[in-house]
Image 1 (cartoon, rainbow, N blue to C red):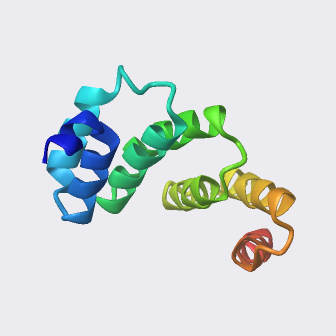
Image 2: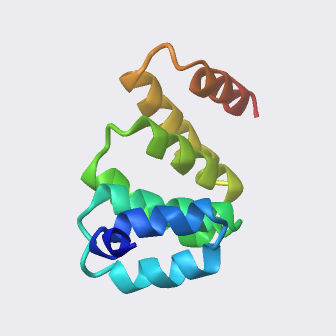
Image 3: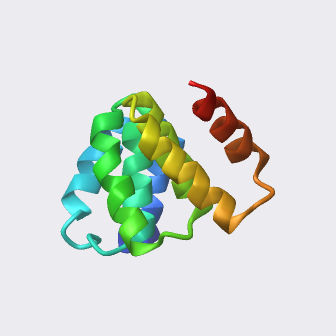
Amino acid sequence: MVGLFKQPKRRLKKLIKDGEYVDAITFGKSLESEYFDDSDFMFIMGSIYFIVDDAKRALPYFEKSFQLNADDIEMLTLKTNVHLALEQKEKAIDCCNRILKLNPKNSEAESLLNELEKI
């Protein structure tokens, strides 16, 4: 069990896996200053907030993760969903375009983009 405390991100992921979202948020917040420039950590924190339906709090984490690693398709996909939840259509379209630039065969982003452009 000692290994979990030496690897805080692993502990954070375990809390999420176990459905302990409140504990994961509290623990993650305590690590934030130490992992501020870690795109994976920012992605994990954004994901926790997204899981608990708090898109507004998730967005800054995905924005920071994006600044640190703009080529992460999984992060861009969740960032797209956060923008949709916040009714930010243009930003969701931008994310879809970025995903398609990285992976032109991403059918999920392509169909969502087509849907958004019709609205």
